Amino acid sequence: MTDIAHIAAAPGGAVERADALLGALRRLMPFDASFVALLHPERREHLSLVRSGYDERTCAYLDGPVWMDDIELLGLREARSPIRLCDFPVRPEAVHCWAEYLVPAGFREGLGVGLFTSDGRYLGVLGLHSVSAVPVTDAVRDLVGMLAPLLAHAVDPMREAGAVAGLVHDAVAGIALTDGGAVLPLPGLPGHPLLAAGSPVLAVVAAGRSTGEGRLQTSFLCPGLTDGRADHHLRITLLAMPPGDLPYEVTTVVVVSPPGDLYGLTSRELEVLGLLVEGWPNQPIAAGLEITERTVAAHVEHIMVKLAAPSRTVAAVSALRLGLFVPRLLHHGALSGDPADR
Image 1 (cartoon, helix red, strand yellow):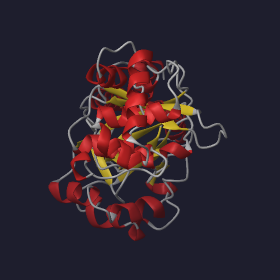
Image 2: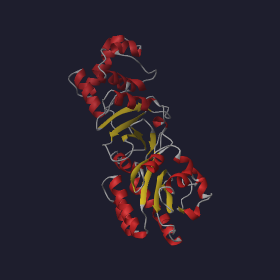
Image 3: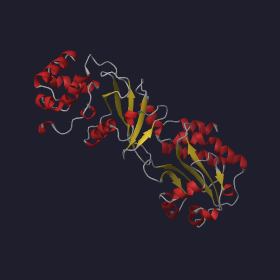
Image 4: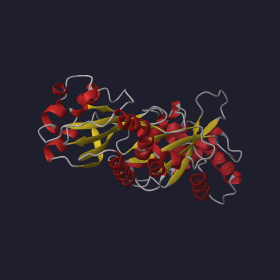
């Protein structure tokens, strides 16, 4: 248990930790094949993190969506206790993976356990199989069950994302996004209505990713949803995740925090700054915000004074660097289109 606790807490990649964990488990019980598979966040299938000892036919089945039926039949997505062949809640012949793939491949016993985080998230499955028909003892089975939370922590795809979110010290909420756009919860941080799937904030994030504008860190402001004051804002910070060794990519961490120093900028000036950041001239800004060009010029002048910027270009660069702007898609009555069209 001490060895596994050290491995689970070790730095490095999830694959490296998973391999080390399987090595430690081999000292506890003999097995001839093993895998750790993680549930894909967007598809009804598991993806292999590490796997060895199985033939190609079995591997193809484990990589497919039908295997989920077996996992659910055995209760591995709900139960926290490991199961051996003799612990199956149904006849082994009814478990397609066992009867049609593992037995023809020569396996006669095994141990499987669902991997759950401390906050109750189901991550995937650990499987250990043996050509011997002798099952492991109850004591070994129960010890693997005690170790399962450590195993889950070692391979949790959100582990690094949670650490990255910790860089925003005053964060009040957060999520992670996969390469396919799935919204995943972050350990230690609650969700937020601003970060719900389909929200305007995530539309801003998606627009930045689709145009290749993603940076290691960027932030912007969003008008608050629950505070009645017109000048209430929250800060949205985007943190890019480096490529990892997981079977699917967690690409971006999105965190909500208090707005910080707004340099005395009003809600309207923050909206104007959002358009300056996008390169909109005064005339399209006036048309889009339904105000006069003279009013726009006054807003720009006030912005330059408050940011101590000698020009509108410098003001826009400062706003981008400081995250002192409300993106166009988050304006009240959100504007659309290109400034050249206005």
